[in-house]
Each structure stands twice: as C-alpha cells, then as structure tokens.
Length: 231
Ligand SMILES: [Zn+2]
Image 1: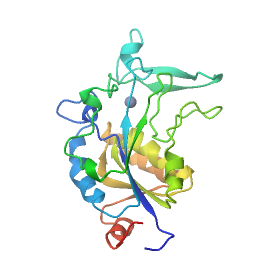
Image 2: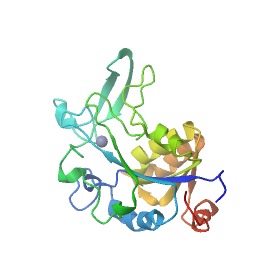
Image 3: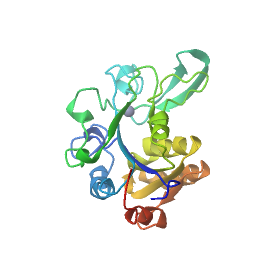
Image 4: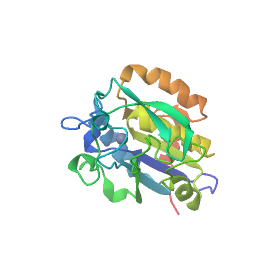
C-alpha cells in the first residue's frame, strides 16, 4: 500500500440510545447503518475507531437538567466554563447515553471485534460535544478526546466517517477531521439523521468544511477494497 494512503474509519456513536426500538433519542432507521458499517469494518483501514457519547447524568445537554425545558424543542445557552464571554445556543435532548447504562452501549450487532479503539465523548458535564474530537469552544477549548493525536500517531492521511446522527455528531466529526487536515469522506449510506429533512442543508455545510460526502460505491470507498495490507 502506498504510504500516502493510510485510511482510518471513525464509527460515530452507534449506541442503543440513538436507535429504535428502545433508544431514548432514537434516530429514525438508526439501526440500518450497522450492516454497511460492518462491511467497512472488514476492510484494511490502518485504524478503526468507534466513539461513544458518554455523559454524566447531570450533563448540560439534557432538558431534564433545566427547569421547564423540553427536549428537542427548547434550547439553552451554554457558556464556556473557562471564559464567560464565549457562549452559544444549543438544542436540548432527552437523557441519553448516560455512562454505564444499557443505552450507552454500542449496538450488539456491531462488529466490535474489529475495532482498535473506543473514544468517549461528552464526558464533561459543562459542555456539549457533538464532535468526537473536542467541544466547540476555542478560547480555551474545554474538552479534548485525544482523537486527532491518535490519528496522527498512526500517520493517518484519510478519514472515513460513518454512524449517528448525520446532522449532529457525524457532521461535526467530518468537519473537524477536515479542519485537522485529513482528507475526509462521510459515507452517506452509513448514516441517518435526527431530522432527515435537514440533511441536504447539512451536506452543503459539510462540503463547505472541505470534507466530501460520498456513496459506498464511490471511487473513494472502492479504493479501500483494492488495498491489500494495513501496516
Ligand atoms: Zn449527547
């Protein structure tokens, strides 16, 4: 394999709480991503990472932690705990992916035996963290999972992003991978969105970041199938 092509796969948040039939924040058709993702997991990526949304029960993104607020419909202002001048409005969610609960587990049908690493995200109760790289605050950043360093330690050149949910954590993951300088591909058949109607608009934003949204039959994915070894 040419040394200038060292692909990594990032499987974002394929967890019970994001899937029917029992997930507290079930993404429509969320379970359908597993079959195509398992096919990808059999390919020779140099690094295969799964991420897990992994919240404490008092996490800022849960509507239940804000008096009078409803999940999905209400928003809350999240302030950088280390810099009161940095803040933004963030959507509130049902309680989901609480550390150590069944809802936080990766789907049993996901081929976890092929994973090299699991990265936890959203562990700091004070900040929302859609991206598995880090929270959205910049001055200073509050929570960093170490994912960018992990990819660099493996000399990764190309990052393939799949998982849930397309319009939130998968989108943010692809945008940050591109920002970190990796050639980045989001494989469209391997994701589903909370609001499917917003996906076309999300794709425009993702491509604006420099990442590409591709099909499982694109040359970028077919290339993985003709790769023979992964050092
Ligand atoms: Zn979350």
